[in-house]
Image (cartoon, rainbow, N blue to C red; front, side):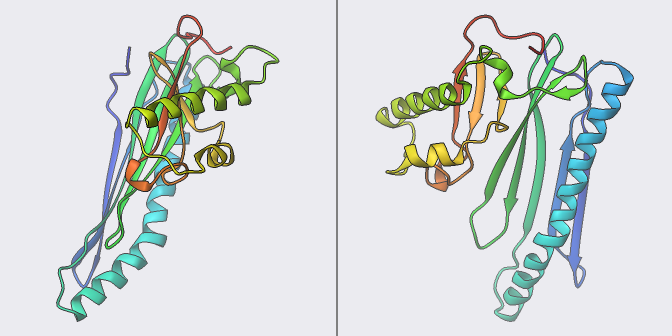
Length: 221
């Protein structure tokens, strides 16, 4: 089951000489039914995340957008249009667990669009994030287990032509692994790696699915 509440949407535009050079949109989720204190905590978390993204757009992307605009104007070239978008998708909701994938996409000509992901899994009973280690057996070598499962999946996908990896992707896999980079789905744990970390940027954000060992979880361990 997925949430039905409408997300909070914010749209901003920045201009130079009256011409729009940068636009940004933020779509943050509304937490599902939970204790009031939990809803407040989660809502505040995502609102702060959205505000931080808009500040990033203004402080980091806007100067670049203005510079590209003025360069294009001087060269009588087409005017570039920068855009940033933050969206959150609920990927799993069962019992007290609520999991989301946040995607940030930056379009900043003349370079290619950049995509980053963030994963969050919440325990709605307590209002706190649940770590990746909680979904592995107690006292297990969960980090090595996650990396081994990810490597096996990537190896099969590369052999089948589903992804093109760097020659040294196994070393890069270990170096780029972040236990916070996951979210839950109905089928398993989605573990993802930064764009350009283990594969060319054209491959996007590499994501592997670690199937659940038994039934999908419904409550925080």
